[in-house]
Image (cartoon, rainbow, N blue to C red; front, side, top):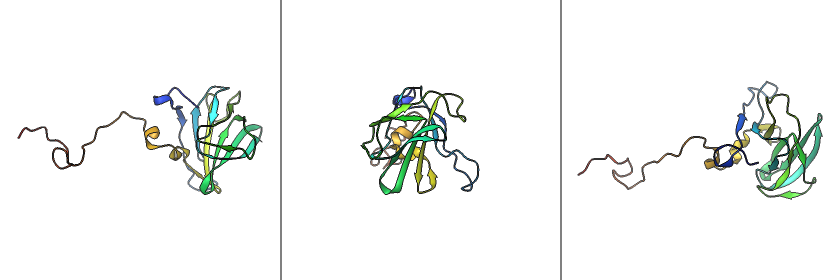
Length: 154
């Protein structure tokens, strides 16, 4: 999905909030701002493991290497179960309507290893996870031996 955020990133409406215990309350994924009909793209390469309704909500699941799975909902599948997808390939589109826990239309993006939910944003390269402005850091060997530049003439 291309969104209104920095560098075209979708805006995160709600972050991952892992539950204290497997049965406790939490938010097992992230909610991304998206309009109905927007394309949804695979976060990583894998194989479509499931595409269909769960509790009346259309869901796409992509099995990744290392026993990981990504989930996307509410997403109408544009791929068949068993299809290989690369990172960035279109897997479906955002279904009309909204999830009960989102104040607006969103995509709930999840990441699992077995039955354990993980933060799906960890799949993104660090440059895409960074929300703030760029920061310049001292370069090792420049100025004061990597400790920064003092600004003094000497």
